[in-house]
Length: 220
Image 1 (cartoon, rainbow, N blue to C red):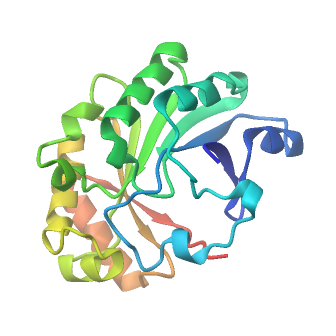
Image 2 (image 1 turned 90 degrees about the vertical axis):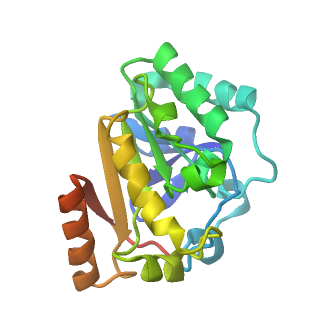
């Protein structure tokens, strides 16, 4: 699926099916842009979550920008509160395309919120400061996977292709994003990290003026 909703229990549904089951209220709509990723996280749903053929997030081929726009144009916008750019991989692997699509959403539906879920390693991937590319009012929230309180544990969990420098690069990216994005959130996953590790992550975020969210672990 390119465009879908995420229901309780980590169930992914086409938007039409989500509306059929629950026609009331607005919902977040996710845009799946790529399978590619610079990490191979030990807890990643890519290798652990079984999905039916008609509801899989694994893309047989990457959708073009125009294909994604067609999917967006077909949405029932009166039922959409937020567009979330993600992927069964890392959405910043298509940084230029994704920022262009954010701009498109804001131009066509300025009242709809935008968010990106990212591993926060785009500076390493592109060899430059990428935070400014999310500026100009195109992005309301950036959610960055923090995962751990130190670089060794981070690399053990994420198996980032960039090695030990990944952790500090992710935190630096998050701090840079504060200049350009109103809401910068770092995340850790419960049941992957224990309460003490989560406490340490929260302390780091508080020290750096960042927000921490504990995500619910899904593996079914």
